[in-house]
Image (cartoon, rainbow, N blue to C red; front, top):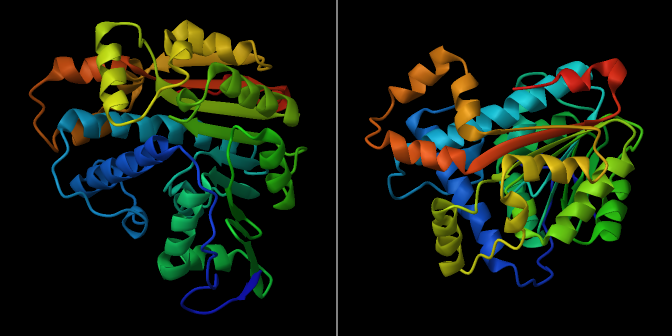
Length: 334
């Protein structure tokens, strides 16, 4: 259906229908990560004026090592994303798969770094909640409406499609349905494309994640893939992480692909990507600008540096490229 553009919100009402799934544990991780990010923003780790419009405030203090971990994650993904945008001069598209309550679209608009179109995909129930917030929060709705030249914005069930932003409710394991929905929102396979997954693939079976990675490599002539997730999960600390999630009914179906940095890199190379790089988050943290690291380390006293290092060694950032030699995509690093 279409909704008239109004000063308060251009999005009208959202559908209440949703497809029931048995992925409650996975959806719960979206809430957990979003609340952690909002808390870190409130302490001053990074600037994000939009997250308060999407995520409830955190009632309890988060440990400093958790906040620093999210800081490194946000910085790493942001660095790679902006490098891709600059290499392509923003003549590209971004697909954020499993986006949750991510606010990157709004922040990129503020920095005049928007791609030709920005797509988000997540479970229909998560998309419905995000659409509700967009519809009712002018701070979220206006930037989308300002970039849309027509009088109406198209919304149908768990999909919102505008000229520069689309959000789609879909299951990433159902690739034909996913591709169909993206193409209905004018995904352009000829454009250089950045695909982002953050703690998404680990909740799929190895076969399902391989299919998604292979689909991403084969669907676009020029592309880059960013993946943030667990690594080194075979050791005792990794086993404790798995057990803690299991107690919350959250099963890491793809944990066997998270054994090492090399297994993460090999998964990308064996499924159609031409180059692949990976760093654990402690290494990435050591590469961040010293002035910024000193600033955030002054925000809170960290008593257990060893625990921070253990946590950071069990997460990694991977990036892979295909095509784009003339753009210099292979040169991108963080």
